[in-house]
Length: 214
Figure 1 (cartoon, rainbow, N blue to C red):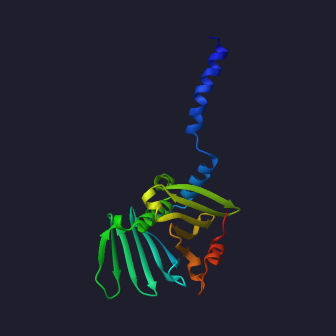
Figure 2 (cartoon, rainbow, N blue to C red):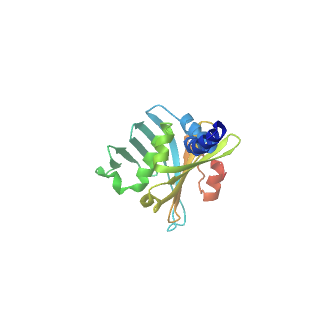
């Protein structure tokens, strides 16, 4: 075999490996964005959530503070309309409602909270590898605005949570939207945007407020 033919054969063998080993430009962009979202623990941010349910005429609205306490520990404090603190730590969820005894149960019984844990911790830790373990990740951009779409990889989770979208600008996440498989939806306004929750929010209005579809 001539040296020229050997080179062609070697190139044809190595090219598929190079294509597999090199991440797509979109994946590199998404990974870089996720890494830029890193915040040192403990990290806290105000939130206001509107939950749209098929069985209700109006959305349920709550507000308070989300906190990442480091590692796999999250705290969700609701201040209005009632006071409640939910903590995720060591694979368990503890809920403390005003005037009631604390309630503790396994995180495996709460797939929505498991999804929140995986997505929120991975984003605040700036850890794209952890995010990709639990989700298929795609990124949309429009100038400085961006939207990360997270689709659960686990088929059991996907039967309840269709997708999560995180909207932001620069290195700041502004909103988190969770679409459930049954058509229900929740949208959380984060940070300064949490003070701008409308008195009578609509799905379309909040999506536009977060940055719109990209």
